[in-house]
Length: 444
Image 1: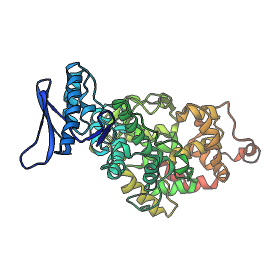
Image 2: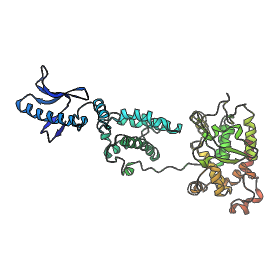
Image 3: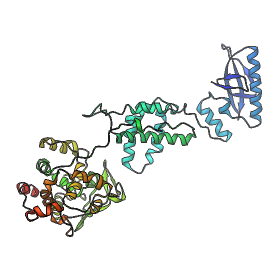
Image 4: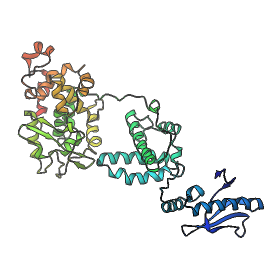
């Protein structure tokens, strides 16, 4: 219902005839208007009861409407705000302007289907498309499906954030991490902004100053492996996967890079890390341009690669027994978690191998800038602010780690950490811990 002061009446719906008529329908006591607009019959109820006074009001209003129609100044959507979207859009096209429905008329559940097809589907990244669709399906649609964009207020967003709790798994019911919460809000903000642009709405930003309502838990640092723990894992992991996790620990490569590694990427003195496989989709690019890098092949790495490449004729280095590329989806739950549990050590995800590689490399004397290149980072920030913090507490593993990586991993011009040089240099390669477990390094 919309009030027009110049008409001095309330209109619920409207439409028109040749010069316009006021009619009543059989069985109804309400007044209707009837006229034609662009040769289309328009018949609308006024919502007013048939009285002499109301007839006069409707007649005056209809005469003015016909006058505006004939002078080309009539806008159907303004004259009949209660009409259907189809009628408004139909006449708007004839009138030569774009009809924009109000935020109250667009339901989020309907719009997100359109947004998925027209926007999300066009993203180049398979991973981004997958992540956005999971968030749309699991978080945004269940909460906002029946709400209009007019309902997307700051208060509603605060209520939405309060629902951010794990839905499945061992952490069910616990608050989501701040990083995960930000990912969810990024998707709904993107959809909201696209709707604003499409319909030219002037709405208050419902995402302003919401940071204080987001989960406060800071991101947890990854726990790295101690050397004895790593030996236990190597002795427990199934033989088919053992070479793969060793290469991950010796290079800092992650699952997607291991999956996409081809025989053609193996050169006499280095591995070229240049493509990935994420959720079964092969990509010729990596996360950032810095992730394209050369990994030197040490004697230990060479021995592992020779073993792996002899297992299948697959073009993929770490292929499955049937020759298809390795996929990480089942590895973590079926293989990795079981091995960690069997070893009776605190659980750490496979990604902790990358952090362990970084910490171990710093411990044995790798120059930070060289580590930046080996890890595929764009700056030294991660090295100094994250990886360096792991070194405290693992100093006693120095000689075991150095022997594990091998002398050829350390640049000749670089020396071990100063506090080890004097007390341990002459014992290089002779630590009891390494001798005790050395046979594991030669496992087939």
